[in-house]
Length: 172
Picture 1 (cartoon, rainbow, N blue to C red):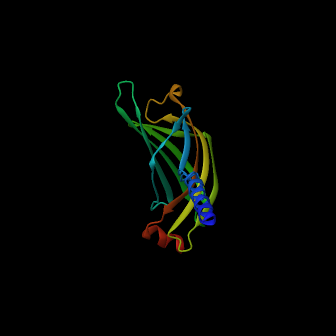
Picture 2 (picture 1 turned 90 degrees about the vertical axis):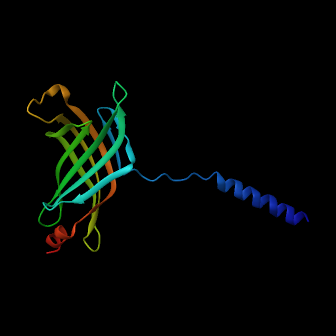
Picture 3 (picture 1 turned 180 degrees about the horizontal axis):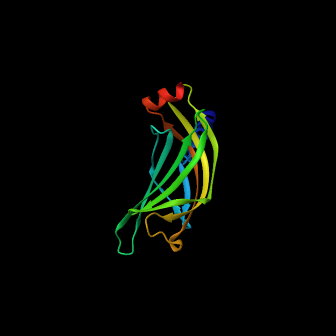
């Protein structure tokens, strides 16, 4: 009888310790700071596709920010990379959108570093990880230096799909 009660106590203890196990949170596809504030990905929502011009366009949707009057302001970060003729990736650009206002990176104040670039075996997609740091300015005819913002971030293991038309050009 003592053996079975000891076994039950040990079993109960094992189950209770198991319930306190920390669960791993999935890695967000992007972590970023925009003008000193965290860019929080809305449910890890993003799109990533290679266009017909061999440009990988990665669009990350952030949670809405609240304006002074309490209305929602949608935000997005767009990162673009160009693939050259041999399939290597080159830097292209970064933009940030807040409630319809678009900020484009200033090329001379931009650093982008690709830390991972791996094609799938069938060449129908690739995985990219990268970091970036830039100054961005609002687009338009009346650009002014007083609205420049800093954007820093990291992209982790984002899969970029290659459409069939681009796939034919890449595999040749």
